[in-house]
Image (cartoon, rainbow, N blue to C red; front, top):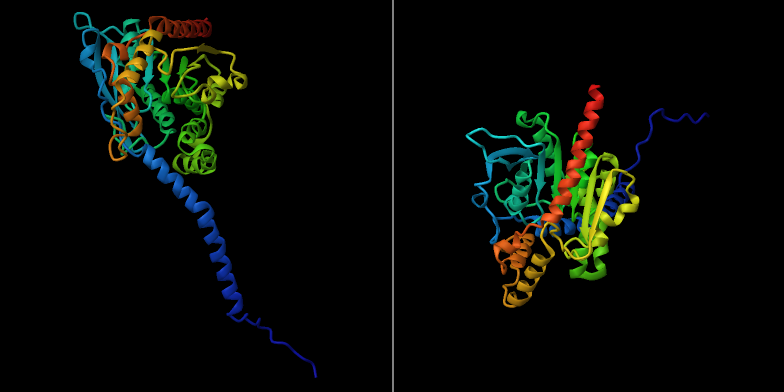
Length: 382
């Protein structure tokens, strides 16, 4: 007899196969959780501990009242992500009630642990020399919204959104836009150029780090030594999760993508952003021919302060800080604590000393960029 089989497929019995598949899935995802999930969670905990707190007004700082006789203030605000950021426009003091507009708009962007008021001496310098200035508090800083600073990359995003805001305002229509970014914003000034801000006339990146990992590794190694390198893949992955495509790029790639005039300045003795973490140290990788460099042997981190004032601040700190209170993790932001402790022992006039020679060099760089822009416009109109 023929052995005719049933046309219906026999269903495999549940049991060993199903159990084996379940064990396999639990093993794979269990290992994934231990090898990826936990280190990523650890990176998130470290990030939140460092950047999760807000920055409040500093103990030794400037206010608009210090300069109200030389410039007018107009308060503004704009969105950066979900947060409203506070900003101010500063212009030369109106004569007979008629304001005079500057030759260009300088966006002054502050360092970490500080706020826009801490840069009022540089803001006033630019106003006195014929510029309008727009400045703002970063996310999680003083007058701006935000539960905390979020991460090192936030400065890049906030500066980008500040530029986008300025471009929409009628009062800035037709004005050349310049950027003065220091420290945290020195990084931002270079990296945000990856967004394609070709409308900018020139950018000054001062005491900036090139990449978030470079500076993270430097400071983390002070606490955990060579173990800091283990944080890199999880730190980068966390940035990508937090910022998506905004996490791409670094200072060098931004400068090269821009192609316009960029000033990169640093000091060899910078204790905050060491020269090996700087944009400057990567100058051999920069192919933008419109990039200029300034390297100092002993101007510390601020650059816009004289060497004598810098030495006085360090001397005051060494002499008077022996009994300072240690950092309380439940207290202020760690970056604000460092700024407060470094400057609290010196007179305000010393802390906010302005090096005319340095600022004149920045002004010269901006002026030449403005002249180049004017000539290009004349050629287009010919």
